[in-house]
Image 1 (tube, rainbow, N blue to C red):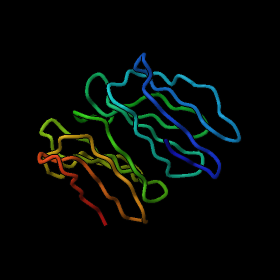
Image 2 (tube, rainbow, N blue to C red):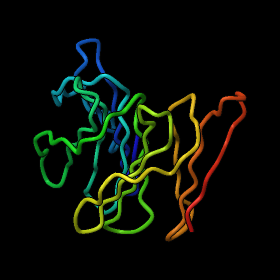
Image 3 (tube, rainbow, N blue to C red):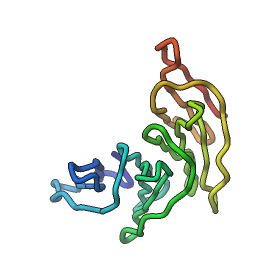
Image 4 (cartoon, rainbow, N blue to C red):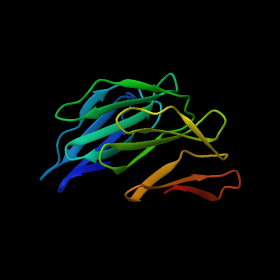
Amino acid sequence: MASWSSGRLDVFARGTDNALWTKYYWGGWSDWVNLGGVLTSAPAVASWADGRLDVFARGTDNALWTKYYSGGWSGWSSLGGVLTAAPAVASWSPGRLDVFARGTDNALWTKYYWGGWSDWVNLGGVLTSAPAVASWADGRLDVFARGTDNALWTKYYR
């Protein structure tokens, strides 16, 4: 889920048909809306501006797929990679998105958007779960995942 405005909350889920479904709260709950696609993971969503939402999920080809809302929904586009778990995404500045995923080598991989998409970068580690990420300050990201010892591991960017 994500919020792009005061009083606005958007919720996303993979439906029983494996499509992306959404509903929002803005003074009351909307009906569920099917946004299509064929997801093989839970979706991840972030907002980097008022009225802007970016959603990410693993597709049937195990690549990272995305679509965005900015006055209307875009189509789906592939950002490549080979994911073995659901992605995670956060924004630490207007116009900036950082996406994290576990790759086939079980390492943490990332790519970011800032005027265009970067290449995938291997951040290392050995993950046994999907990553989670949050930003609590401009230019700050904290990523968490379970390691081979079943403990919670973290890596941060500042």
